[in-house]
Every structure is written in C-alpha cells, then in structure tokens.
Image (cartoon, rainbow over all chains, first blue to last red; front, top):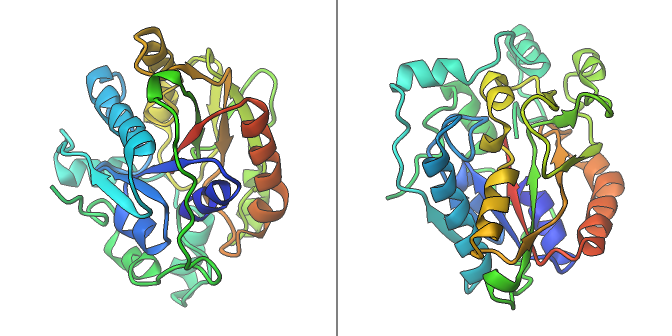
Length: 116
Length: 168
C-alpha cells in the first residue's frame, strides 16, 4: 500500500496512508503517514464508534492537506479498547491464509508478505 | 505518542516487514503538494480490505490465491459512497472480516466523509471510492501494470484533490 501511494503521488495526486504499521510505511517511503495502534482490518477504529473513526479521519485529512514535507508521520493517540490477547486473536482469520499455511508447512522463507 | 507497528502482528511475521527498507527503485522522495484549502477540496478514499458490491460486482479472486498462495488478485472495485453494510461483501483471506462486514466504515469511512462535507470541513467527496485487495505478489506487478493507470485515470476524472489510502 505505501508503494501504491508513492505511485499515485508520483502521478501528481497527494496521498496519505492510514496504517497499523507506520514504521513499515516509513521504510517503504510513503509520502504522508498516519499511524494507528489498532488490530489489522481496523484502520479507522472500532465498528460503530463514530467518534473514534472521526478522530482518525480528521487527522488523516489534516496530514493530507497540511503536511509540509515528504515523510511526514503523525500517530493517533488512541489505545485499542480491547485487551491485547483478545484483540490479537480476533483480527486473525479463522482459517490461516494460503501463504501462512505454506509458510507453516515449509518453514522456509518466502518472497511474499503475509498481509499488506 | 509513537505507535507500536508490530503490536498485533505475530512475532514470526515481524522479520517479513521490519528492516527491509524501500522496494528497489522506490527510494527517492515523491511529493505532490496539496495546494487548496481542505474546505475547497474534493477527497477520495481507497481501501485494501477487498470490498465489493455483492449485488453487481465479482468478489476478488480468492480461489486462485488458494491454489497459488504467493499470488493476490490485483483488480479493483468502485464502491459508491452511499453503499452500506448490507450492500458490501469482503474478500480478504488474511484478516477476520466480521467487523468490516458489520461496519464497513472502519475500512472505508465514506459516510463519515460525507458528514464532514455536510459540515463544510471538506469541500466535497468523490461519488465513489476505490477498493483493492491488499495481499499482492511482492513484485506488485499486477498493481503497477493494470491497476495503477486505471486508478489514476479515475481519480483524475473525478477531479479529486487528494486520496486517503487505508491498508486493511
């Protein structure tokens, strides 16, 4: 996703990436980044929590429109309201993804990332 | 406050992401200045949660991914801003999609963006937003050759001044 953002930015369209892995977006050289410490699948927050979703979207808009330079990163100061162990388990698919099954069966390095 | 990027990631996955640096050829800064005021700007959204319209669009191709685990469907879908939870399906084999099905706004906050338009925080929103499926072949070749030119053409055609991308 950070690379897709780079390509779209290079076409002249300003972008911001709202991501659970802002450190990775930085490494991949995304132009503007908003970090959230949320489980995967939840970049704008808890289902039904409009206030939380608004806080993230408004920050994304501010960074999109107001960042002054390449590589700007601002993180959202919200703690996920579910205990870590439970949240860690609940974001994961009930059945392991094909690449994870393959990794587990071979235990060899792969050239693909398990999720983006 | 600095987000821990690996808090929810299984420990064994961390080396697949951390310290790998930029992709080859993607080291240089890229920058398109955002010139307008937000209240005079049109904004588009992009999610990689694999959303599609159940009534009129094909799901992303999960069957081929089952057979070829290092492949991910590089196609994209246009999601109308007015689409709600009952209209939207999800194809993404790497996350539990129950919460997104219950409230797609956690991945694609189109209605919330419309609310900010009504409040004049944002000038306008594009009438539809973009959905891709985030798990891709590491080369991103399908996105680069097929999806990118189509997305850029769409965003330009809809005269969006900026794009918010949210990986799932």
